[in-house]
Image (cartoon, rainbow, N blue to C red; front, top):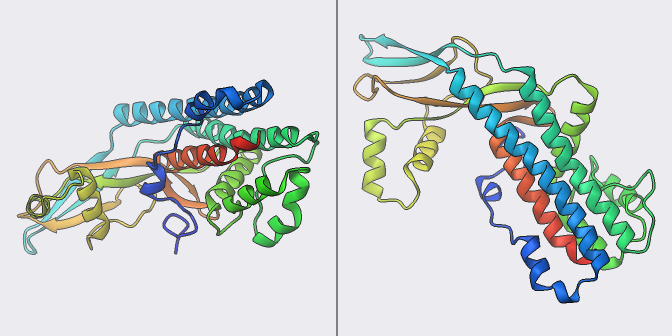
Length: 300
């Protein structure tokens, strides 16, 4: 199973749009019991997170501009004998390196937010951060067990227990943190992260629209259409889109002349994460990072 859809990846729509209780709101409610030092430490961590979020927002705006100004050319091939029509991509706009640079900046600042949190926790526990202090993320659970305490020296029992619940190593619930860590390393040692265009959605066929209307489902039509695309036999497997890439074959009676297809930019680093659209990936990393802050802020 690919990293894009495995349980370990924890890349789900639920985690992307999970409601996270805002740390700032908690601070205001409990302001009378927080020392100014703790307020300052938390403020600095949140400032770093907000800086990272600005990079994420700027990247998403740039991606939207790119897609708006560089449309994908879609064509159709009719097979009258079989009564089918196949839609395919005629041309794919080249993704500029600038988008990869911006993506790397967003990833790096999210990773750094975790390091800022780790340093703040060490200071709050009465220690002094050194060159080894960082948010502990490892390739295996064994490495985490053996080395994590050396990265956050002096933390108390309950703080360490909360940190352990993150499971920041490959294949665990904190697999997202491992992905973030590895992508940041790639960006630091290579010119650009590898990105690609991937198909992410299409308009519903008449029969799908009828099924949606009949179910009277509470989910929106776009979500329903995405579900149909994921289940349909003629849906494309996630793969980098190139000229000639087939998007699906449909009965002529079902294929609207104006059938639309949507594309997104995805990170294409197979050993780390496989073709997950960047808007899902970055929102997941933001959500999970904020959740970690939310769980650990009381130790600052």
